[in-house]
Image (cartoon, rainbow, N blue to C red; front, side, top):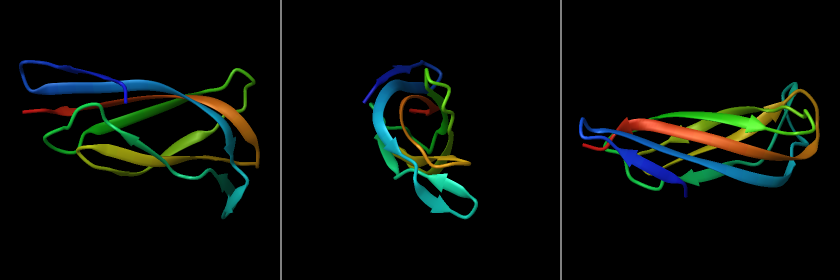
Length: 101
């Protein structure tokens, strides 16, 4: 589920890099196309809902934006979206920062 660091001031950072293969972005959503949702579980539990940041990397240059659906103290869920349909491989790098105490 990734790694985490707890600081004595109560701050915690969780992060991970996840390689996703054959992400299908052919589902129309208005003028855009979206993937299925991807649930991610944090490696440690936050005290309150953390701030989550997600980056996507694709060596072929097929970009997609990430949209968070919801975040809890244990996990977050979201999906990729873009202007045209595609099936591609992507590395998702995420980081969550919040309080553990």
